[in-house]
Image (tube, rainbow, N blue to C red):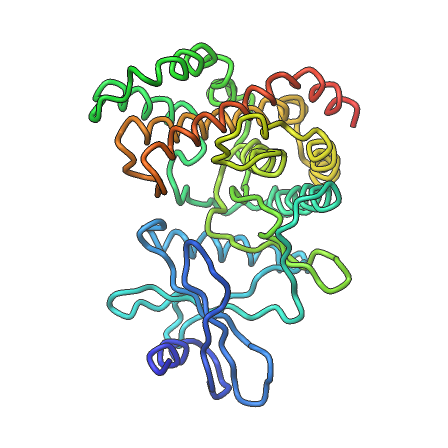
Length: 350
């Protein structure tokens, strides 16, 4: 770990660094606990930034610094990042990009998705958006068109036109069903062009395990800020429900397992509307059910495009994996679509 200690020493840390140990099993970034002299528990966190995914590291860290500075200015808890000894927000060692943040002691993360935690998540991510709703400094779009359904449909059309591995014929049913709903599901982008729907600063990766809790179960802060960028509120709302309200798994081969859990929907929606009450516009609120349908629809489009392209983006465990994912996400979309009127009544009732 001598090399990692050397990297940590590039940051504004006055204590003697005694050890650096791996932390967690992050899918995107490599993360380490940093121990210093005189402390039994970790004092800092060292993280390698995955610049294959986040290619503009300057924009990434600029976004994060603007967000955390703004939240700190309101005396609210958020992550705290250190500068390097030479005043930068990250260190480049010639090959890799690194950052250091203060370790949040006695904090816990949960994987559990229950109505109780869904309510807490809705309220916490809503409050996160609310805290940033008056941030005047512009943020960059760190992953361009990440949640742009028109862009994702264009990718699907391009895949179909090329049909590089001859799979289009076998998925005609799903293509027909997707394009049949295209006008309905591109509503958000049209409302934005018409000037009716604003872009907000959103987290764009809303999961229960992206919150830190204290031992009493109170939320300390929102974490994993790499994807924070301008987007519609539909991103934070719909993306959470796509995974949390699914009674099956994302790649469930048994479609009978899949339904859209309305108890999770009710709890998350209640919390989210409480958290966003200070800024959410009527047009944003009334279209939350649309967002709940949009994200399984969009993920179907992405999985299907990758299957048609010959599995070039998502890692697969077997040849039909992306097709199974497509089928599972489409079933989730259908189940959400069946509950659209019920969702609308519930949202208007809050």
